[in-house]
Image 1 (tube, helix red, strand yellow):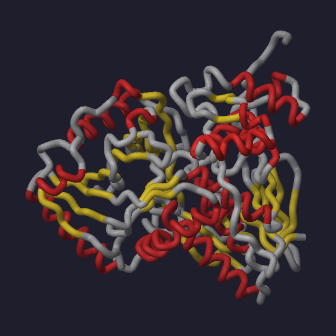
Image 2 (cartoon, rainbow, N blue to C red):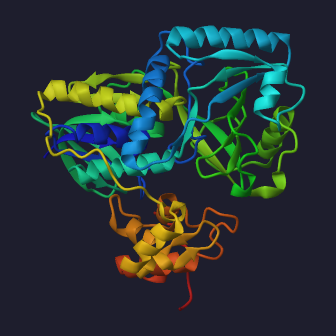
Image 3 (cartoon, rainbow, N blue to C red):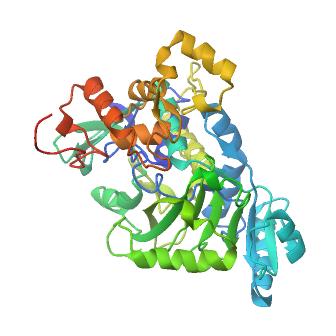
Length: 473
């Protein structure tokens, strides 16, 4: 019997689990996929928004500003890279310039500090690769960037290190009420009992709420496609570059990532299903808009593309409320959900701790070791580690300089990597220019050895995404 079961292992579920670990509560996270950070928390822009876009008085506005203020310290504790690179919202005519002033005023009412309108000359001095058609820009110094999946994985790992449990491939299809608990049943027949449930299921949040007979919101899908450029483009833009937002979202952006890549996108496509396939017309849309924002786009450095599906709610705001005696809904957490996640996790955990009259956990340790740290060390520091463990002297992924030692760590520390993508998201092996063309066979062998798998049992990301099928090796 668990005190709390969290349904969903995205950034909201992981950071809620971490905050609950601060209390003497027995917590389990139930994730439908083979790994945490499998949905929108894996495929998004990685932006830490300043907080000027959300409507005044909304939950989005409140938790955006709170989460922004928390993000740097949370990342420092979790060994996750965060960069306060600021953001610019570009205007290209007088009507758009007026919108900048509206955004600045809204941001100030939301509690955002340091906002100012920059002239064309000031903007181009900051960012030399922007279009010379720019007329002005809103400068937000509190904007930043973070790796969304690294944050999610590290938060989940820290929660587990402090006593939380994780069950993957646990797709909840039934919720059976008893006198003192809820029995949650998975597709494969496994079940857990919990006194209280937190619904952080993202795209599946409406379905989970309906299992409890309490859904008073609906969740819909909006797909966003991206183009990712190689880390050789580091410095092409320094800040996150937006244009004025529309009803469909914040539009196409051009931004650096914390790992030195340049990210362009997303599109905004209404979907009947949560489909993350990529469309050719999506590329055309991204490029036509990005070329109006920037000059000399280094598109020859494109290394991959991907799509993420954002679950948004018909309320057009976050849903953070009890959905019955034993359920708390955290639904409709679209942008700025990543930014808001530390504050949302803290809010939910405090609500539950008060409800359970839970005592603080005196043994809680908020810190954990960074992933993919080795290449950032000095030669002297690297040699000291190699002297203790020669595996760190063997490069497996040449593009990203990922060592055998780092991959072995990813296979053994919480939450353990069990797939090719699991290794990639923790170490960056396979994220470089060759997109795992060189290092994937070595990763496959390591997974086979660690989990006693046959070659045709290793998957890319769980279920039936087998890397190899048929034949003999």
